[in-house]
Image (tube, rainbow, N blue to C red; front, side, top):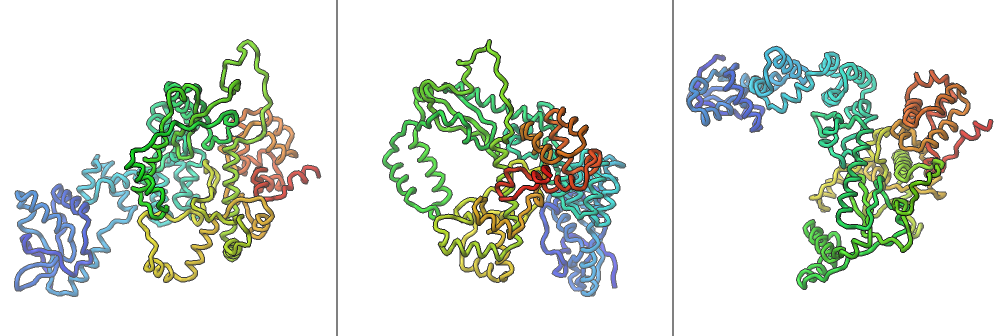
Length: 613
């Protein structure tokens, strides 16, 4: 038998039959605000003890906790807490069924939530705080759902039908237009894309907020200069849409850093736009100069000697920080005389952090290319022929891509990976290495990741600074079985496989069937980093036998247009058709990789043979 009672709050408690025994304080707070705003709309449900009239609540635990909070903080609200409506039963089986049913009926599906919140915002002009109080959820949840409510109906329909995930829907909120969101949603539904693939499709030609240029310039300055940033409400991802403006601001910020350094009194201050400037030819004309060292106080010197004699594993993070501090102090600072006689080099690393070299002393009589004192302003500068050679940064990226391709191929050959490891560990290879088994990692991602395909198996596991090697931990690892052990070993070995040009590397390449184009394809952003002469050379190698009129038009294009045209030729079938390309010519595009990657992997090029034929 069941009926509805009006019970005082003091007679109510959460029953052991309630499926939810733990409650989020934030949700309790939200539920309290909802009840204060609109009242207790639905009664609670519970099992009554006839002897004491106490009721164990099996459905409505959050509401009960919210009412208890109201009694503490708003005792004047007697209308809410003196007579609480409760559906009651004496039968335990019925009470248990109520508890289970409540858990399956209370939560709206994501699509239902999105539409409900959106309707309330549009029709009732309710703000997120009001919606949160009415539905008993947090404001953050409402704001996220309202962002999703702006998606076109076909996207929400696909979410309701479970044809796309909530993560994919969230990624689609960063689309530049509703039409583009629907277009990408259709592709995601057909190909079962995840949210990362959707973001790559939407923003593949844009600059990620983690790009070193974006980090160095900063979103605030970029936006202040008129740039637009697309932000993802559901993560920290952002994209800088105007790469040209970003490059301009990057150069400007580096120039400002140069002026600040010049104000310190250095004889010269050079800058290098690359993230790894140590191949700068100007460095061959200078020698590094150390600052004047200082003697540490006796106590500090004894502490330094103690720390330096500890092995790396014995030092705590505090020890490392203290050792760095003592070493920096002992190294000393540059004197005014050294500053006046020397210069420095500034550059921005791959993480967007500004660095400076040690003091650089230029040999007597040497004049750097940036020293204008030796130039004759009246004499016209003779034009230099543009080199076809890519910059060192581009070479470094191509090396990383080739390395990742080799590692990806090794993932499919776990037995070969284990054999190579055993071969190296047997010391038969002497001091040479097959795998990078020293601290650190093998660089296998370029700075600019446009065109890269996802390869999560090559991503290292998250580093846990608190993790410790122990017998208990090893037992847990072994309990996962040999299949798990082999997969971990294969992934780790693949990540450590180093690039090489020796004969063994060619054997590895042949056995794994390494394929760069399986993990990377050329893009407009890649071609923009190459000299114009290199773009012309790529076109000549690939499409020397294409329509002469199209080739003539290409030759007259500006560099940026050439880069765009080449990038689209690799991905756009309609453009290939406009060029009138044959199936054979398209196949060349589909397998082309730069010479530097072919040389890295020992791949024999066949385009030249086709051209000769």
